[in-house]
Amino acid sequence: MRVREFMTRGVVTVRPETAVHAIAALMVEKRISGMPVVDDGGRLIGIVSQGDLLHRAEVGTERQHKWWLRVFGDPNTLAREFSKAHGLKAQDVMSQKVVAIGPDAEFREAADLMDKHGLKRLPVLEDGRLIGIFTRYDLVRALTQKTIAKSTRRVGDDALYKALNERIHKQSWLNGNLINVAVDDGVVQFTGFVHSTDQRHALRVLAEATDGVLRVEDRLRLSMPAQGI
Image 1 (tube, rainbow, N blue to C red):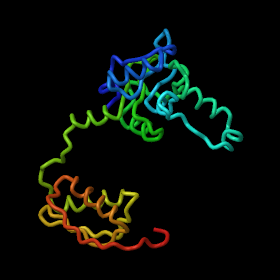
Image 2: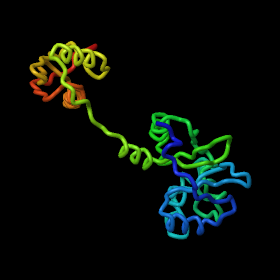
Image 3: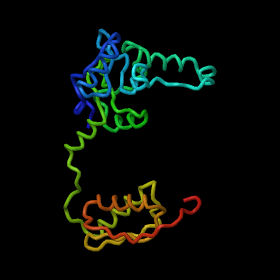
Image 4: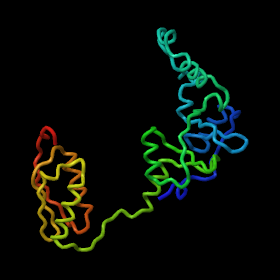
């Protein structure tokens, strides 16, 4: 799936000279948490998010530093904080380092970028111009349009045994040599050892998501990982 399929078009944007109080009013009115800042040519130059308006002098949330940090702290950081707290225009408070994505990027890339940078939204740029916004909400929305289900076809026990063992031994989080698999008429029984309840849970998920598995019987035991495993 690609970003352009689910991105939000017709994005509400502001200009560098837009007043901060007007931006706040738009956020409340439109129920959005971030607004791209664009120039006359529609090129993205920054984003104003709720986080950029978190520490404002008007509402008494301006950062208060201890005296030693005011004296010895990084002056550039302190200057940026002052602009965020007292700035009157979008250009004063916006974040200029913007992580963006292209419309033909796959969902995996978008999710990885959001996760890596702790972002809730990604501007979508085409030829340098803003054409949409892709958010975490859009990822969740896409999930509602996908059927998450395995095939209901029956699989022979021998084939199922082979498939399960292949999948188990491909997992980097599991020592497959410690797992014994038995299959009887679609019922899978696990014996052996895992090193944590997380591994036990993930192994059950692996089995239940495998075509042909009707039920999983977990008879595994927990053991401490040996050195070097």
